[in-house]
Structure formats: C-alpha cells, structure tokens
Length: 190
Ligand SMILES: CC(C)(COP(=O)(O)OP(=O)(O)OC[C@H]1O[C@@H](n2cnc3c(N)ncnc32)[C@H](O)[C@@H]1OP(=O)(O)O)[C@@H](O)C(=O)NCCC(=O)NCCS
Image (cartoon, rainbow, N blue to C red; front, side, top):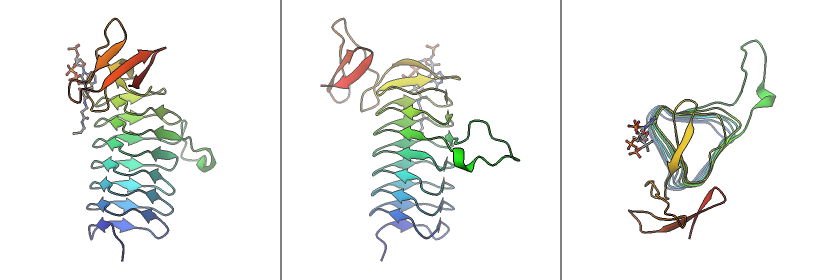
C-alpha cells in the first residue's frame, strides 16, 4: 500500500520513490528513477523526468516540467508554468543526452510564475525569482531577482518579505521578526 496520493489520471512509472503524504494531481507524469520526498504537492499537468530529485514539502504548481539534471531541496516552491532547461545549445539532430547540465534549487527557494531557468545554475536557499524572470546566472541565497536577463533587485527573508538593511547591515523580517545580517555580499539569518 503506497502512502502517497495520486489522481487516477496521473501516470507513475515504476522505479520511483515517492514519500508519504505527497499528492499528485490530474494528468501529471512521474518518470522512472525519481526520488520525491514526503508531503510534496505536485499540481496538474506536471512532468517529473527520470532521476529528478525533489526534497520534502516541495510545491509544484500546474504545467511545470522538471527535467533530468534538476534537483530541488526541501520547501522549494515552483510557480505555475515555470520552465527548466537541461541543454544549453539543443539541436534536434544532435543527441546531447550525455551533456545534461545540472540546475540546483536550494532549500526554501521560490521560482515565480512563468520564469525560465537556463540550465547549469544554482538558485540559492530562500532566493525568490520574480514572475517571468529569465535566470542566466547563479542566484545568491536570499536574493530577489527579476527581469530578462534577471538582475538582483534586493533581498528577501525566509518568509519571502523584502529585507531593508540599515547602516549596520542588519535587517528584520517584518513578518517573522527574524533578524538578518549582510556581510561580504551575503545574507545570513542570525
Ligand atoms: C518580484 C516580486 C516578488 C516583487 O514584489 P514586490 O516586492 O511587492 O515588488 P513591487 O510590486 O513593489 O514592484 C517593485 C518594482 O519591481 C517591478 N517588478 C515587480 N515584479 C516584477 C517582475 N516579476 N519582473 C519585473 N519587474 C517586476 C515593479 O514593476 C516595480 O517597478 P518600479 O519600481 O519601476 O515601479 C513579485 O512582483 C513577483 O514577481 N512575485 C512572484 C509571483 C508569482 O509568480 N507567484 C506564483 C504563485 S501564484
């Protein structure tokens, strides 16, 4: 008896591991060799390609394809219709199956609706990629990036609120009250 839930229209290929409490909605396809954590929510019309690894409590909104080479850590949020890639210079007539580039989405990060992540980059922990952004470089932990090509416009807390650093490089999340420090161009939670 499996302890995850999948809608009757979902297709789960053999050879994947899916954690307890995970829900998989209409017309989604989990391909072979995936490792999906517990308490994830995989929306409608989602494809999880072979050997993709998703952590626990990952939320995947509708119409997302997570290609081989992508990993998402715990608590990652993938907005509706966001796009991953795994080949930098695809050609239909040239097989590049052995050249898949890796994309890492680290703990707690959010990818906004319709954003595109060009492969080979890391989205740092708790980073927030704005709706429609095109990410072409690594994104720092806690960074807010928007636009095409995406540029960093600020910092966000683990609650996704903007962080305003004072002249001692300290900031307080307005929602959680948690304190953050900016040091050498990197944010850390105190
Ligand atoms: C990026 C984001 C977090 C910024 O939110 P915010 O801090 O409230 O920003 P504001 O609305 O105050 O906008 C600040 C500026 O950034 C611009 N901006 C906001 N979001 C933007 C985006 N996604 N791309 C480009 N520019 C954006 C605004 O136009 C504004 O520009 P201006 O200063 O020239 O007027 C938010 O707009 C966003 O894209 N969230 C993702 C939503 C999403 O995809 N959810 C998925 C689940 S439904």
